[in-house]
Length: 397
Image (cartoon, rainbow, N blue to C red):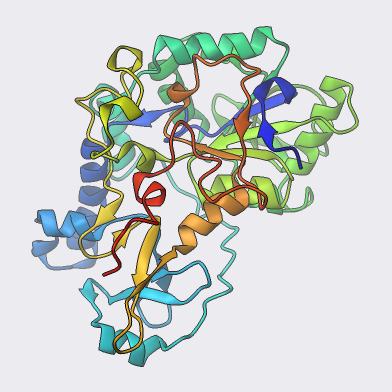
């Protein structure tokens, strides 16, 4: 495999929508997500009203990179070899002694594939109606640099695709707000209600494409014969269409997404596409020196100093990327990569904080890719997470 990756070498560029092309005001949207669930549990299921009150400690508990043990009700954080680093029963953190008794050196190697997705209505409940009522409170518009970059890709002859699990009416609302009413001119193919990750893993007979009429799904299609706007579908029929559109037997596709579960892993594993992971945690290095990051004048709305980056480290759960393992008596703890960190380098071509971070680069810019021949930090652009850069200098707990 080549050491470098370039957009210029790709025939097709695909995008997820939520948290990829469409960036959310995270403090507001996270609060809305929590309130939507809490009110449902309290009003519809009779849970205690105390759920409606959220403390800073509650927010610290919520972080990426955890797995849920459905049988025992435990949240677990895994090392790269599948051993349990930290765990909680519900929201109560397990002590090191309880952790050793519960899990020992058990290695979690396999997980439920969860390739299905529950159908949802985007016109009921609290979350979707609220987004539709006041999109400006929860969404960031795309910077001009990103819009210009999309047009540049189009003008360079790239096929542009939007593949989202959002329904068509919600997709249209988001895209009109972030890109403008003419957003459809940017994309050759729009696929909504894609039900990822099943879009990539299911056979065509299991998940056919469907036509849309006034945002309602209509007839199932035996194949995909022309570009346009469709619902559901599968990567196999899509790739056959891409062959026809490019005139190539094996067109090269790159897909941008924020979810390892729904975007990056399935696109890489099932479809063998190049993948670009949007990793907001790369924006969370508050201690990075100013000269190590981009100049302020080159930062757009997403990277500005007023933005509130995600924490890459939780007081309860530690770093998203790295953690410590207790050593034997009279020996130091050792630092290990987390399962989440391992998956980034295993299934992503590169990882970036946002599309805006690369929008002003030339299309033939050569990114150093993740690979077994490179270091664990090689594929992060513009910089690796600070905690990984300093891994050799860190003092083990």
